Image (cartoon, rainbow, N blue to C red; front, side, top):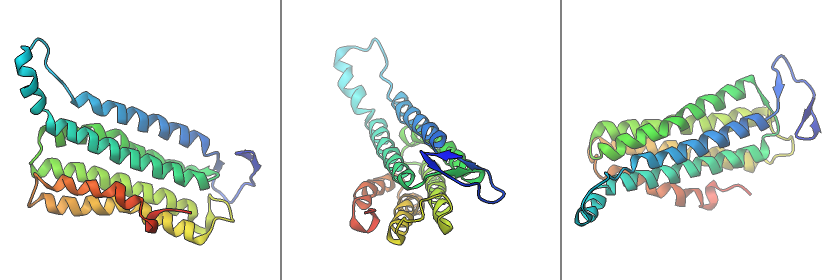
Length: 209
């Protein structure tokens, strides 16, 4: 079987698959979900010009939720892209891990809408954070499963690369779990904690070589 131009032997009872189809599906769903986020930004038609400024100011929470979710999904996509730089093949279990991960990617526009329209409520914060936790856990499972015993990665991938990938994949679900707890006490301000995620991912501890 030819996988990314390299001959791969059939390994055990699991069927070995190419990773290209998963990457293509992931790119499509990430792109669709990130585009769909803008649907939450709605400006009524036919308003007098003098009311436009007040209407826009009333949409601040929607603009914030849009920008936050776009950046977070972008961070997940970059992590997924980095993972597949090393993942050279797939199997049925790996494919289903990615399908379940993409289920929560596609759910992000809905949880973002809740955060935008019901900002300051505990439930919207918990559901948004829960979406990120589940997405992040499946992203972590994707990397851990692929690198365990170098099941789906090249045999020359360094141990530190694998360890850095594990640390990186747990950043967002860990922060999201913290935010869920904080949102129970400070629902209006808790979502600002998510803004630390992009800087964290750029720190040397979480970056691969």
